[in-house]
Image (cartoon, rainbow, N blue to C red; front, top):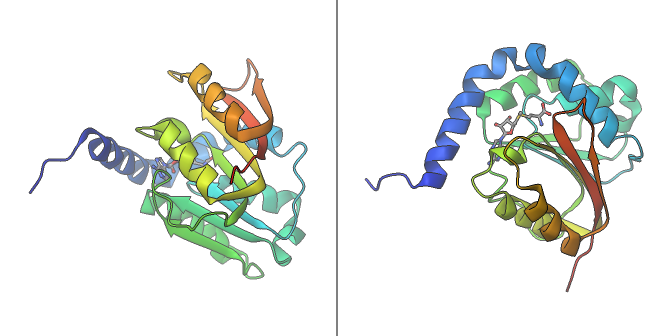
Length: 200
Ligand SMILES: C[S@@+](CC[C@H](N)C(=O)[O-])C[C@H]1O[C@@H](n2cnc3c(N)ncnc32)[C@H](O)[C@@H]1O
């Protein structure tokens, strides 16, 4: 068997890390993640479009939205949660199963750097504290851009520690209109929002 390359090695470790912390993830991180969701959703309007939650984990974003507005999920809005850790997704599934009225949520075991979607399929993208885990953030961003449509809203929250923000900013500036960065002392992530400019 071929030895794992650096990328696969890192992914294997990430999967193991999140699989092993999935059962207590919510208790440990709910409050801090909720503070990021509040910022991300400040000017966000829900409509009947396809939302991708990339690196959705246990579904804290979904739970947050549901708590404030259950009606959102009774519409035709489609919510896709994608994560590389099946145990994090299992926790998410428990949440969905508790709400019988919810029909339009799909969970996918997958990798942000190799998204299992065709071009131009997704209308709203969230990636909350997931992208800093990638071996190659730019590859992940390229994938999110590939699957997004012209005008797709990007709502990213990335852990600031060890992040090369200048590189990410320069890259996204070419792809995203109205690019907005928020850095707050009280939040460990940088919040990046804007709308996708699709070049044909
Ligand atoms: C800090 S958690 C954040 C989870 C969730 N977004 C939240 O706000 O609670 C990071 C998540 O990213 C996922 N992740 C890491 N690398 C990934 C990859 N390459 N593709 C998909 N998910 C990934 C992890 O499995 C984990 O669930």
